[in-house]
Length: 106
Image (cartoon, rainbow, N blue to C red; front, top):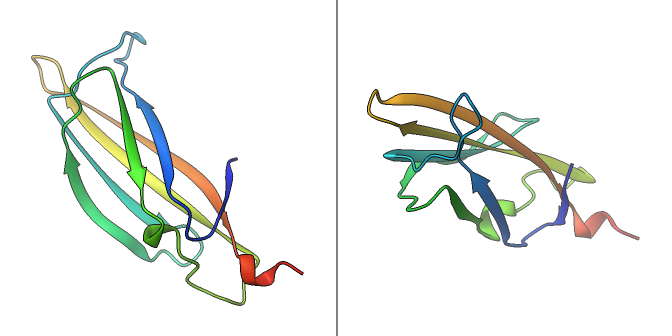
């Protein structure tokens, strides 16, 4: 699991594949960000427009803030949903990473 410092920008390289692991270009795509432990939604569903079988998705430094200063770290979850192909097939994936609370480092 990737670990980053709080208030750090994270760029996720997304790769889009069909059920046969063949690269596809989505016709629609959206993502959301949640705090795993608290269930707090950090970003509601947000559309983006990939133009290739890969796409760099930027998670901002503000989205990687620590919510509970008493914790050493927090897990964040990025959920991505895409629609692809002439039959409008759907795919969903999660990426979970850890954000380290720098104020807790001694």
